Image (cartoon, rainbow, N blue to C red; front, side, top):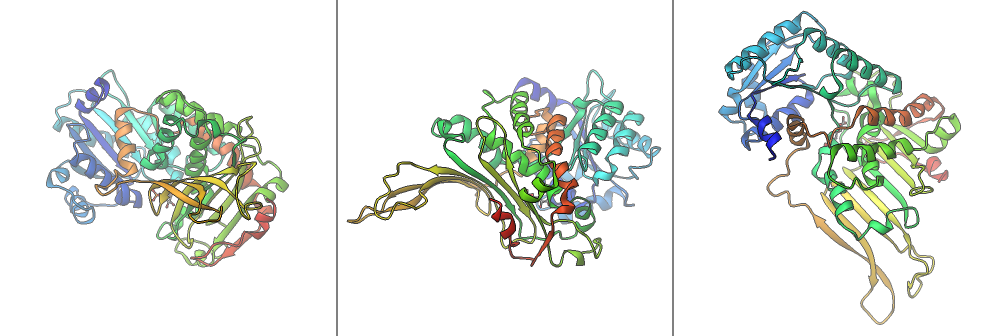
Length: 472
Ligand code: BG6
C-alpha cells in the first residue's frame, strides 16, 4: 500500500448504500463488503449505512444480513446501520446527513469523515439523487475528507440523457467525486487483458490488421431476466451489457499500450478506441450490421408488457476505423436465455501464407486463436498447429492454456470496485468521456432499430442468425 492509500485507510469512512434492499446489494455489495472487512481491506474505522424505502429497524436489517449473506461475522454486523428514506424526498437528505454525522461521531470524527455513496438504485433516480446530494450538502468535501459517489451502469439511456446527467453532476457536485461503475473492468480476468497484452512481447507484433482476422466478444448467459423484469424492460440487452461491459472489453483488446499502469493513460487509450468505432447512422447500415432477438417466454415475466419489443439478445458487427484495425471485424454479442454460460473474447489470427500445411492442408483453416475466457472457465488459451504424430505430414490443432487458480476464491469484482473507489484509484472506472463515446456508437443503433426485425428464439437455444451472417 502506498502512503496515500495508507492515509485513506486510516481516515474514518462511512459507506452509504442506496438501494440496500435491492438485488445488487444482496448479490454483490453486502457480500463484497463483508469479505473486504474480513480481509482488513476496508478503512480501519468504517461504518456502513444501508438506505432504502422499506420501513425497518437497524436490528432487522442486521438480521437480514446475518441470514442472507454467507459467512458474515458479528464484528461486521456491528458496523451496520439502516435508514428508511425516499431518495426523491429532498427533505429526507437532512435526516440522512444527521445519520451519517451520528456514525462519524461514533468513529470519533470532529468535522466530517470520508463518505462513499453507492447508487445501487434504478438509473431513473440518478438525476434527482445527484441534485439532492448536492443541495443538501451531504456529499460535501473539505480539507480533511472526501465524498465519492459510485454510480452503476447504464449511465443514461442514450447520448442525450448521459450528457444531461453529466451536466447535472457539474452543476450540483464535482466530476472528481463521481466513479462510474463497470464491474467488468474490475474482474481479475479482464485486468489480465492489460497485463497479458503489455507485458509479453510475444504477440505485440501481430496485434494488428495484418495478422488478426477478426475478434469475437461474446457474453452468453443461460439465466433469464429473473426478478429484474421491471429494470430490464427499460434497458434491454444492448444497454444492459453492450454499451458498457462488452464495448469496454473491445477497448482493452484493441487499445494501444498506455506505457505504464496509469489511470489517465489507460482511460485515454480506451477512449481512443471508442472514438474510432465506425458509427452506423443510417437504417441500412444498422440493418446490415446489427441483429436483435427476444426469448419466447420473456413477455410472461412480471413487469413486462405483452407487446414488449425489448431485446434479450443482440449482435453487432463493429469496426474500429484506425490504421491498425482497418478491415478487422469485431463481433460483439450478448444475450440471456442462451444454451450455456459462455463469456469470452476470441482473437482469430490469419492463416499463415504460404502455409506448410501438409497433406490436404490447402483450403484448411490453420489460423491461430487466442481466447480469454471468463465463463464457464477462467482461462487464457492459445490454439496452435503441430504435426500429428505418424508417418504422414498432417497438421492438428493443440492448445496451450493458463487456468486461473481460484481454489482460494478470486475476489469478486465488486471488492475491487469498492476498494479502488476508497483508494481513489480510477483505473477501472470509465470516465464521462468514455461513457459518452460509447453512447455515440450505441444511440444511432437503438434509434434505428425499428428497421431491424425483432426475432424470437426459444429460451435455452441460440437465435437463428442466418440473415445477419449473410451480410458477412
Ligand atoms: C450486469 C448486468 O451488469 O452484469 C446483468 O446488469 C448481468 O444482466 C451481469 O447478468 C453479469 O455479470 P457477471 O459478473 O455475473 O458476469
